[in-house]
Image (cartoon, rainbow, N blue to C red):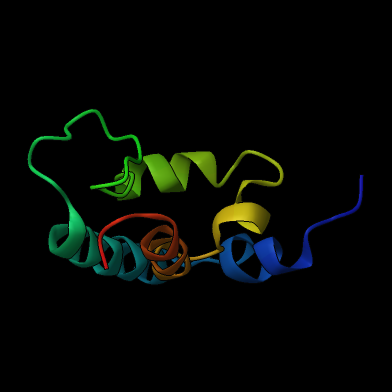
Length: 85
């Protein structure tokens, strides 16, 4: 299979500091859009998936190509798909 160069750019060379900041930024975004009634971590029309779920799925080939390579890219796509804007 062909290598995903964008994935390598975003995740392949992360330092501990960059990873920590990426997680903190994602948690802040999640706080803005999460729905307290959705607690399983999965995406719904009213709540995005949790950052933990996003980062775990980022290791599945093709996930980021379809959903965004950063949590912000994912949130932007989720807002376009969902009823919450």
